[in-house]
Length: 257
Image (cartoon, rainbow, N blue to C red; front, top):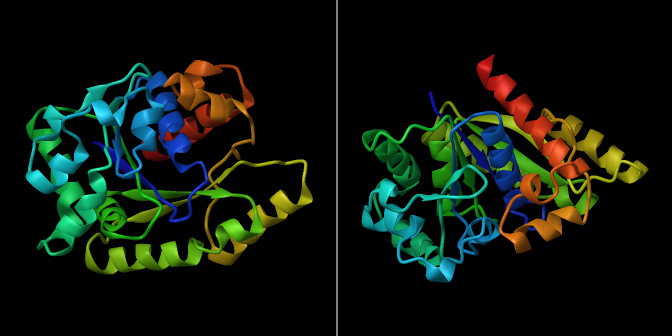
């Protein structure tokens, strides 16, 4: 069985893409077969894994709007994960899909094609764009669970309620089985009372689980994309890399029951 997990937050700068790349690489270290799907027109995930979006002739845009088989687009990366890459063309997909019947199901339909191509993955991680538009709704419709990365600062959780409203609507209309797996605290500075208080407030206010452990704030994360690898490759023994390994192990344990 494939576990499809959306990583979503309409606020930018919360380490969403870093989390997708790092959790994916950590799951690969645990001998899981992993596909990462870049649904952000900024293509940050694609770039951070060492692929220049401008060099790509086909991307996830062609899969979602032109019916191209994902098998023709998937790229193997040095981090041991496969990638369905994005380019700036994906910005057009929102407009292309708006008038299309069944637009909420385009990501799910694309992932079902992987089964037809005998591309078996244990995990599919969906890197959602920083908005609550068509692509995010389509990702939530395709997923079994959603993880919300959240910077532990007061202003960062103002949009959580909106995201949870969207999740509620998706549950009602397109994906009854969608579950919120919890909040993943990122850019966490445990030395400050403020960070700890924000974390407790979020869990209580929204009645959400917290995905452990919090991801610490470190410059090592900024260095990784420049090398075209995840932090697990560029700084293997750092606190950030170790935290993502623990997160991945906890997510795997949840699935294995």
